[in-house]
Amino acid sequence: MLSEKMEEALNKQLNNELYSAYLYLSMSAYSTYIGLKGFANWFMVQYQEETVHALKFYNYILDQGGRVKLMAIAQPMAEFKSPMDLFEKTLQHEKFITKCINDLVDHAIAEKDHAANIFLQWFVTEQIEEEGNDNEIIAKLKLVGEDGPALLMLDKELASRVFKPPAAASED
Ligand code: FEO
Figure 1 (cartoon, helix red, strand yellow):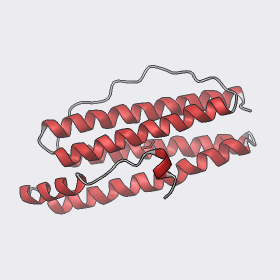
Figure 2: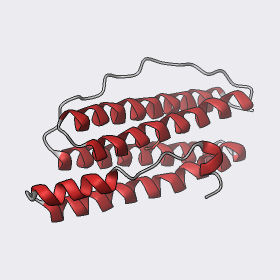
Figure 3: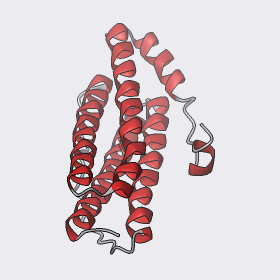
Figure 4: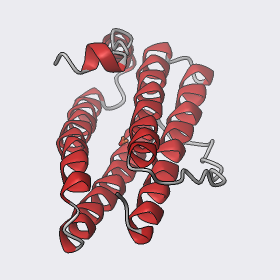
């Protein structure tokens, strides 16, 4: 069972997750354009993960007998200054998503909505991993600096990221 307010908040987060997917798809396209196919792969996997996050909200709302209300997805930025800029903006965005999830948990606790609270815990954990990944890559980019060959080595590393579909992901 969902309150009207919780349904609205979950639909808003569904939209935030779809926007995240859209943003990372844009970053993937930019990365390909500047010749960094490994970066492009990393962002394409991120795009796929965000669609999974969006579908988790979609399914949860429906499972609770609520209405899914799809809203317009904002246009993501398309121009970036550098590989560092891509990941600084990624981290900034993920910090925003972490705040949204934390606010949703606060909302669930205030309403004594235990089911929503349990559902949201998966996202609390996921956000630790997401910010951690971004921090790790930003640290590597700092080491790389202006070194072209080192950037290409990092690009090769990011090319190895593989998308794990939900069934496989849940085995982690
Ligand atoms: Fe769905 Fe990147 O958080």
